[in-house]
Length: 521
Image 1 (spheres, rainbow, N blue to C red):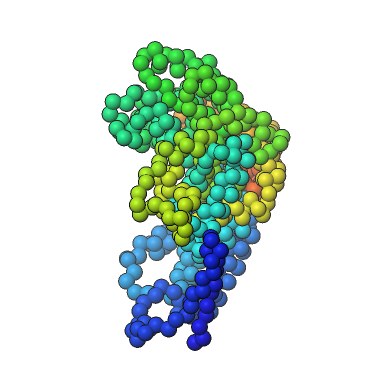
Image 2: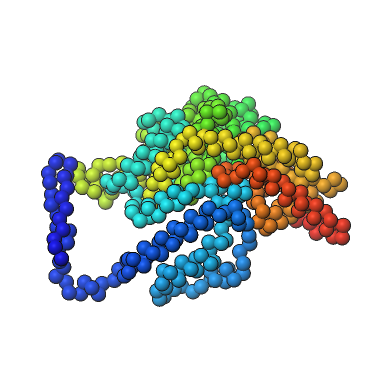
């Protein structure tokens, strides 16, 4: 075999030549194990088939049920013993195609509106493959993946109106992003990194009673405690009551507590309500507190010229959490946390060590180390799928998609108001629509049970997947619309299916006691 040489210039302009194909003197080399395929062409052929099948899977979603229960034989298949011998990749893929691919959650389907779950894109899926092929870990080290993530974070700052000097980190999602933002807040106001929670002031964090449960869980993990999360009532539009917030802060100061932070909601999980973020920022400035915004899906309203006024004040946050895998449709999982003051962020997490130190040159050259800004050193190349998705579509198109989803949600709300059997139970200001099926003469428990049974039948039918929530003690359907594949006709199908299933259940009740529907009593 001829010698193959490579040349490169180091940072000082010196050329180095390296022989990449020096023969090994070890005769046992051919007996050493590897996990690479023996036949690269066969794995290439299988890979082409996989790409074709996955693109067909996404292209034909409308022709399939949204969701169906997992069959018993599939559950039994997935209780196999630990494999001890190899299986051919072609066989493994056949098993995947037969048992796994047909039974997803359903969020790639145009009539999936459960929770707040994005639908992904073809290029985003391919980006995952490319990132996995490169297989970098982004804790540190000089590598181009770091530059890609820095580029994405810089775009995030521009999208949300944060200063160029702010810091940021891509994480698994908003649960992690909220935890990091509140960790920076706690460490900014206490010396807990050195002394622990011993002899620290009793901190208090404030926010809407509609806030996501991940805030409570973050305070539990941070040692602040769930009892020190002060839930503030909301107004008729489910936005935090500013006057009651100010009163709670004053009352706690008088009682000897140490107010730490206010959490603003940019899109509550129940109704999509957006707090008055500008007013919250004013309160925080007067009280000298930390302002964290949970913008899991609602923060991207900032991309719409028509709607961005609804999140006015988000740019004033000390820390902001939002997701790419919800309303921006990047494949799961990837979220972002931004911190206004870079030094605060670094001080909260950095832990210098020799084995993670920097050299003047080489792979450990002084570069940006993401491991100093969060809890993970082992970090995947999440940034590539974000970078490629934003490049493919551009921010203006995403802004129009947000507007389209909001308009479609308003269309659904009008359908509900026009349908005698249905009741709209909360204002549909953004992209979440909450409603229920009404049956005259039923008491509250019976009506809750009826709606629960109706929702389960709807999901099992495969026609559409909304989920539920409880508002003012009532069990209600919740359509959380962040679906780029939905059409107006899909909402007609939803309402028609709800009416049809409800009518069938009422017919059944002519012979079956209503108590059999009482699932929640």
